[in-house]
Length: 245
Image (tube, rainbow, N blue to C red):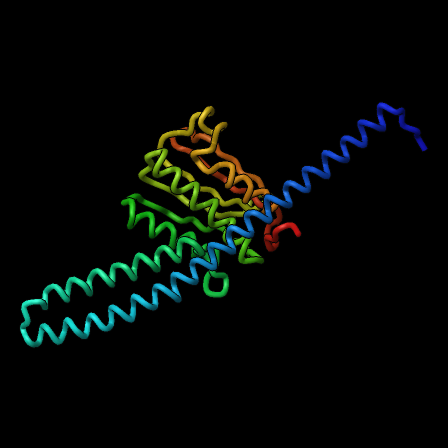
């Protein structure tokens, strides 16, 4: 058995302490993300089952009142109709907000379904063109992991539109070698190296933390023809994606 010198022993001890600290910080980062997602889920349920149901009841009563006023040709019939319209619009916005806070429900849909719905929402809201290419579909084991994947894709898409002025986005899911990749490609302005290094305004730090929580990696690269590709690479083809304990 080789005996370490005092200097070598101190270096070895420092290295072990550093590794322990890295593991501890990663664990805390995953805990923070998990707490944040759970809180978003709670607020989402409150909005959908609380405020949403309350507004639905008001809209039902307002519709009945508007119909009665219309039958009587009352002068306030048009105002009542407008109130019904505003209430229905509020219900739609409440549901959209609730869905945005807790976008994936593995009991009802897959990650692929949620990405397709995201693409539809982006086209409707921003008038951009979106394509979803599903060459292979990932099997996501936990609800929290599914939301991590979705949040990374959502952030990449929003960055492309808001910061990169993209008009066309492509979401591509496929197995590559021993990894599974989810890529978001856009035709917008390429991200400058200095801007990417700072990354604060682009949510890059949060995206990387989510990728690490999944045991994967995140890359952001300019495309030869212009635009940017954001790629989430996850280990294990056909293996359920699980967060580290």
